[in-house]
Length: 76
Image (cartoon, rainbow, N blue to C red; front, side, top):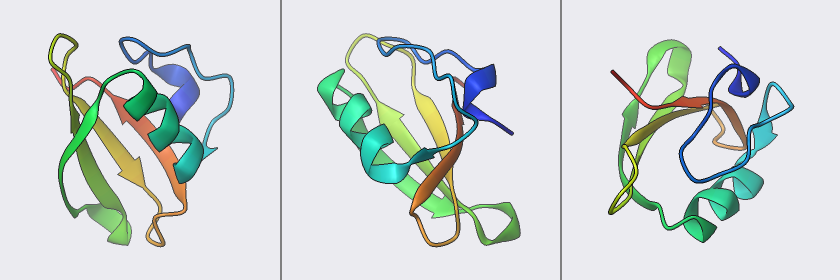
């Protein structure tokens, strides 16, 4: 799973495989997304949902320590 394989509505395409969580969250909130919830994911990773008033919902997968975003995508 890598960020550079997915395009998120409203933000520029990622050119790196992962990004620091603070950088990702700043991009998301600047684009108008709000954090909608979270849960435990596979391999102790954290899944976070982001909502937007017009863009599609985003699921992001964070490292277990929540310091790095491993991937983010619009679920089908």
